[in-house]
Length: 323
Picture 1 (cartoon, rainbow, N blue to C red):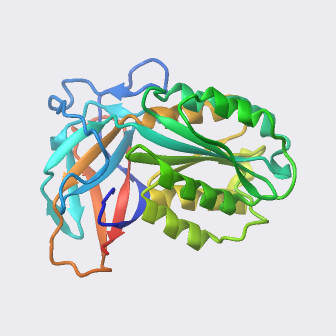
Picture 2 (tube, one colour):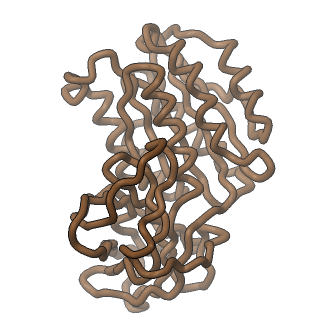
């Protein structure tokens, strides 16, 4: 939820049982359009900005993916319901967002990434291949003993890749400090949609900031956080503290968490994130006006689909604080 009156948003990914047309063949990273007979004709209005368009209207970004992780396009307003608290609210505006994106890459260059660093670095370009240099922008923060802004905002994404060639895996891990620096840098963003992509094993042993401080700053900043956890042993990663940290950061800010253990899976995750940022639905509604300042309001997005086929996953914010 992006609100200029400073809504503090909490988010998570929720999985709902819905039914869609049979899966289409092709690249699983490409956006998928549903069969025209499975849903009503799509609303072709595109949201130009994730910011609020009215002093009271609330806009909720929503990502819908199929069982292969592909973004699902072709839905319209009739396929969604939104609840503020326990009360269903009419959807006042609807569109498929293709707004310009400001993105920060937070790259773990600490010693713990030594065996996975090279393949992660080489895959970073897949993210920027999906962006639009004529309007999108990005920057690079590298993390080891300290966090450093290695490349300021640029639309020449090749310079970010070049900056990565001058760093190597060494030192301890100040990951949370790196995210703090990236969130501060994001204040200089020129675009309405803002996102961070973290590439790391999630370990942190040298930060000054703690997770609570980072989460508060992130939700205040309305920045989506996507994480790519890179691990050698995928079977045991759930028992490690690093993946838990990355999972919390992504869930609480409305992003997604990916798990990878080779160059191919890191590259796929990068491509998926880049595609997703230009394929989000925006649902606008008017909340009740009698909620007191500081009140936490829950949000729930439901997807309405015909019966008969697989489950879709919905990523949407689940609440906000009114200030």
